[in-house]
Image: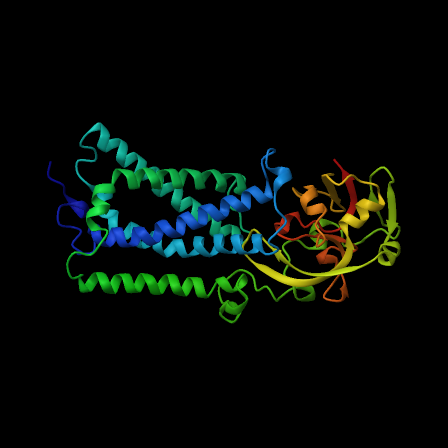
Length: 370
């Protein structure tokens, strides 16, 4: 059948709509997506571990979550121009005629449609998450997690289906087109620019170039950024008779003054957020394991920590024994030598190594044994 209009034969004339260019871009995009997927998987496990793994999560290295979540966001942002370039290179294939030459061809095209849709949703919802903007009715984290599996599964299926074509064009066997070199140089430059101007929210030595990231890690109360203020959490006014309750064989009720009289520990630890930013600070407070020893808690006790905030998905969080017994896990009372600002969790907050920021509970009022 003769096609008419903008999709007729000969419409797509660029020499770059060819397999070699698609394979080169595909290699870069595949590396970015697999890095993003694997680091995102680690982030998800640390934030919401399966029951069988819950009590075996490591509290070290101290900066483990900072590095993996930073890589997750960096590789996800880098994947955006790569995905655009890849789709531009192959989009004439979307208008092949006839649309399906066989059942197998129809299934292949369906798998590509699912792959493209999953990747577009994954990278753009992830980008909007870094801005804390959620203009959709579905829960972001769970949807993002399962879209990641769908995208990677579709990617592996696509690579398997196109393996012979990829193998033929994996290595350059003849001098490259000048157009291709210019196009690949432009794509490389685009990836470099978006990476260098956003990665500074995680990488300290790139902070001077942090022009377009949603956070600067050195801006905020007491020089640290925040996602949720005390006003938003309803904790801007702390009861005058506030006390920390620690359950155990020997229950404790400690005022702020009594906590300040206990042995104090100072540790340099990062706050690392799921949105990709991180910042280090010097935190001072009581080691959580010292509080547990005073309360007579067993060494393998898992904790439930409750905040003063009225609602929110992380008002109550669990802490495995590996974190609770780590000597760097603190009930912090001060940051960088100053009493905690209300936005940073006054009168007391949790700070622990290798732990997502959403689980570093602010405005702590109760620690219970599970």
